Image (cartoon, rainbow, N blue to C red; front, side, top):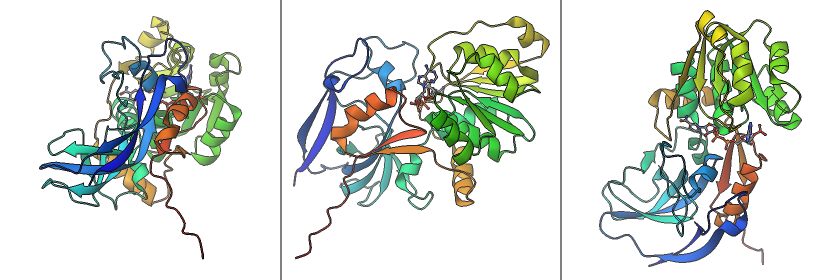
Length: 339
Ligand SMILES: NC(=O)c1ccc[n+]([C@@H]2O[C@H](COP(=O)([O-])OP(=O)(O)OC[C@H]3O[C@@H](n4cnc5c(N)ncnc54)[C@H](OP(=O)(O)O)[C@@H]3O)[C@@H](O)[C@H]2O)c1
């Protein structure tokens, strides 16, 4: 039997701000799985600012992810449930992580390396798998080597990556975790709900001054999602032997590198990419910390299924969400009316 499915296709490349008019939402029909195929009902999908760059006519040539095609639903990290299978590797009920986003069903083929089977008992809910922990772990643990007593600064701390990176530092015993973000409400979120020691709004005057007040003894680890002025301020306050992990450039501004503190204080500065890679060490720590009640999965839920995807992405780009922005693709089950 065929399945009716909704998908949101990118139909025009935005030259300035993204709008809902750059998408069309259509109903399609998917046939039953053929030999070696399995049908997935998508439950949750993650949205990120990087999607805007992937829509450009000429995205940065060194981005380690494929650009979005016109006329197709964009790819996006998605979690779903196998409904029917004619593949030896998958059975109905299996929970899977894949990249076939912006649609509520997909027919996948055995051997597709973008599909991963998940352990449904590992985390409190399927949406918990849509975190940016592999990236946060690489920057905070492998490059930043955050440890007991360190003063850690995370720029873009309420982003999907930053909100996890700061909590990793806290769980590893950092002495002080500081975050920058874009509003008072997000400062409250970082401090009251995620356990940051302090946070500031980068719109509130020179970042170097805000940071000097909050990190009077200098910064040991800097996890940078923003670049520009925030990188310059952090370098000015770097402690001896500080480690800087360069993750992203949300400000779009290349910083000026002041060689004096970098050289005289023996600062290590290293960029990295980990686009949606699996990281076993992260998953093991994440599951344990969540179980122990020490780690919050930072996220915002948008309801409405595929039809809400274009609007949700526009809101994400406008900075309206905190943590990972999650679109719920599976409508809530209808409650039968009492007779
Ligand atoms: N190196 C890697 O492997 C890797 C992997 C994934 C992501 N990244 C990078 O990591 C960064 C965060 O990614 P994400 O997916 O976690 O982001 P995200 O959750 O989509 O971040 C959205 C938030 O970014 C903030 N933002 C937007 N414009 C900004 C600006 N001009 N200055 C400062 N903050 C701004 C807004 O929060 P506020 O209200 O706080 O401004 C917004 O809510 C991005 O630069 C991304 O490209 C790198």
